[in-house]
Length: 452
Ligand code: SAH
Ligand code: SF4
Ligand code: F3S
Image (cartoon, rainbow, N blue to C red; front, top):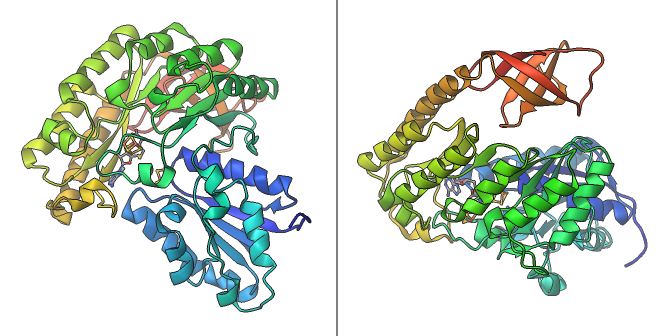
């Protein structure tokens, strides 16, 4: 099993930052074991789809993609196609058994030996795909499963400016609508020491921005020292002053004063908090098992605004959760108007098998869900635009991320508050530089400015 095989692997990533970060882990494992990573499906011997299960749509996209990949299989009968990520965990062997495109599955905790799995499949002496399909032997990974953090695996990063650093995996919150606790298992944190070491190494390599990742970073607990998330934030902010830090995401039920004060205290911790509200109605929040009331939520927002007056706030909202009445829906819109998020990710409720909410009566009609969703999207656009209008004349420290997609003569970067800014290109600057930009114009999604 130990001889190297050189195969070209193409990985396509769907879903959240966790998956993007995991793709870097998978790439790293594969390269260490003699594989090459390619950036085109057409030149691959192995295609891996790193998948998301959070909404039905996300899964549908993958099935469509699998159908589309048939053309590559026609050209190369030995092409191996794997589903990794959250869908793999949710559907396991069912995928391998029922979809003749899929040769292998590996869930988020099963990447350490993914090269072995690919080898096992490619060494099957047959030309028929049916026989090539090998389901994942769960026992193969069982010992690693519970505690997996990939702490010792250096992710394969390609960006050079911004990096994700996964600080914990899994989720214990069991919000009633959500598949994540089932696809990513229980919470476990990486030791603070190793995160700090990774961050200082990133600074030495010239990285300028790091986003600390976890499904609920507030639950971070160093297994060695018991340090909490604010302790970790302070530690990285001090050890890497040339890097600015972001994190996502925090659960509103346990965003502490200590965390808010820590953000306020350090210049290089971004003034941006993503706090998923989900709904403005207490009865809906209760049915969602979110474990906070809207009053508690508003109290936290007030605290944030009093400690960090220019803090940007963003959120997630679900429209049409089971039992949501028009009154509940209006309560959500009212909360949006009070809080004034800079942006929001807004979704129509999607019932997921295996979750608690799946057992509830999905009683808001599809058209009504869409109507409510459109209403909140429309409201948010109005709020985003008016929030952005307040930016005109302000000066922001912007990290240059690259050339604007629309024009070679413009740069594209982000403010500390995570807003996209477009400004005229200048020669002496490059990607990864911090510069001061004065805001001169805006839309609901973008700021425009000039270098000062
Ligand atoms: N851990 C993160 C959320 C990860 S999922 C947090 O709690 O902040 C990202 C978002 O997807 C959620 O906040 C929620 O708004 C949305 N979402 C999750 N499950 C959903 C479902 N079944 N239907 C619609 N939206 C959902
Ligand atoms: Fe899902 Fe809730 Fe965990 Fe976020 S906190 S991942 S919404 S269960
Ligand atoms: Fe999707 Fe899994 Fe992330 S379900 S949102 S890829 S944790």
